[in-house]
Image 1 (cartoon, rainbow, N blue to C red):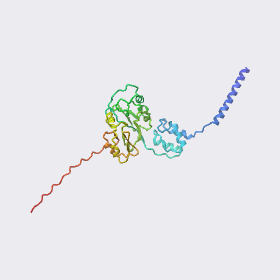
Image 2: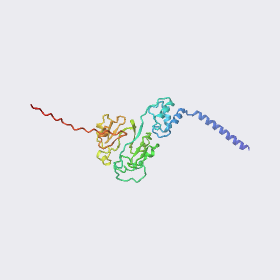
Image 3: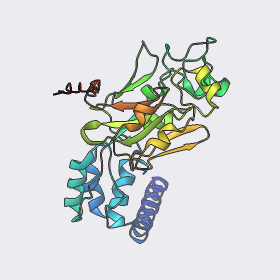
Image 4: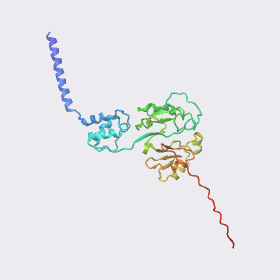
Length: 293
């Protein structure tokens, strides 16, 4: 009986000593966390998409509090309303951010880009891209397996069964960038949504020379440079046989659309163009007969 009592007392004493050690250690090595981090985290959508550039919503909340400024920080999922709430919590000014949207820069539909082989493997763009260039002569275009669709948490992108290309639902897109990261061909880009959702962009990423690119796709950019010469705002550059429109310089005049011989430049959500008035043929007035006396 004495042995059992001694064992119980010994174990109790050891437990008390260990508890005291743990208590002292917890106080000595305690890490203070600003309570505002949790407050900011509560208003965030908890999508953890990484579109803000930080590892999840908790990382974004921590960065907002510790930075002491919201400059350069924006939650693409929550948008401006969420940023306004964060600004109220932190007592900071919420910076206005231009709405962004995902844009698919490939118009190589089944009609524009004929198939030359058939892929019979795993339904994954990442796997297909690692094996070969695709089912068509264009090794730069969309592979059509839908990795971008699977990556989107907001059901904002779907594959069109007729064209075989992904299409973005602007009403649902949060510009989180998940589809951009998922695309191995880099055909999806986050661009400013534009006034009234109007955008002008080159729907091609093919860097082959003109004849080769046109053979692979009837609407590919051939690097002719007509759009570059036509743009009055120097918004278009030509590099590696491919033109690119800078959304920050483009004024949506659409002059480049008219001169593109390949119909590669897309004008989205613009009203129909007014038909050009036909010039009336000039008529020469008949001279009045001279009156002779």
